[in-house]
Image (cartoon, rainbow, N blue to C red; front, side):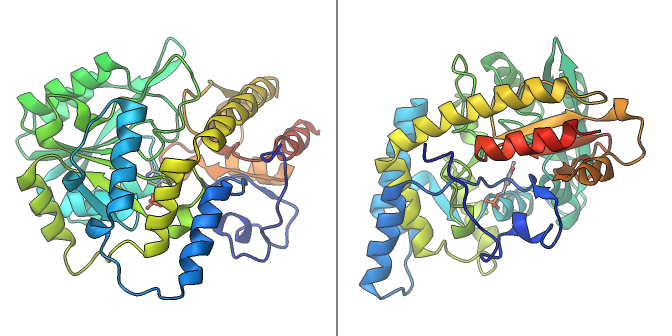
Length: 376
Ligand SMILES: Cc1ncc(COP(=O)(O)O)c(C=O)c1O
């Protein structure tokens, strides 16, 4: 029931709602949800604010949050980490940019898959590096990576880093053991380090699938940085708290050195919220997965019944990657907006004939979007 509730965010300066303010377009783009946080998160934040002193807090010394992450990774993924492996960052975006600075020198090459979350596509150039693109292929109705292209790029002696996105945004695939093994094998043979953006990993919608953290893979542990956060799963992205898991001491040192003086400490409310999310919100979390699964199934079915649109069912995330090439229009984004629905433009992800719809919202909002899209 809690996920059915609609909330007015118009006075909150929410990024998602500001874009279409003053129009009739339903914002279904940026990747936060329309769900109110779980009560334990809100109560923990209240309690911390009530204390009234909000001075500097060193994340590495905030033991309850570090233990909460370690316990969550153990329970969810069977990954036993040493809390000392954690490096907190005020977002996953700064973290993969720090990885570019830490592990590459000007002019080196970095592998990035495509289509992809725009800041991931932008990271190499922002850091004076060359980008090597690995395509996403549709094989047997599932999106996966072009592993032959990956092998070719990794074998370039100037290629020092791969930034992976798993689960994949925007296509929603979850890497299988065999696929991660293949990535590990390629990285090891060609001496490429891996930075794995796993921000969506707690949102696996297919209950037969299990997320496999890169850093938990025996061949990758010593050559990887795994990036995670409670932000997407628990709708606390505005609090800016995420963490890198870096088992190798030397890699950890290089990462913290590259961040020094540029990347601020995670703010105390982000630590409080992450701790509460990972220790007190299992019921809310499980209920949200059920709700998202239902939304996904409904939206996939409806989108595939609309002339000109097609999609595959995402295995994870609350994001649907919709192919609008059969619309025969120059501008797929404008087509959606003319119908009154505002997805993320596929062009930003590197595929202009697509659009990405956020289904992390009350079912009533999805139904409204579908009705708008079906209208002649
Ligand atoms: C793959 C991916 N990485 C990172 C982010 C954002 O990370 P942050 O807000 O923690 O910087 C997003 C948000 O949509 C994302 O989809």
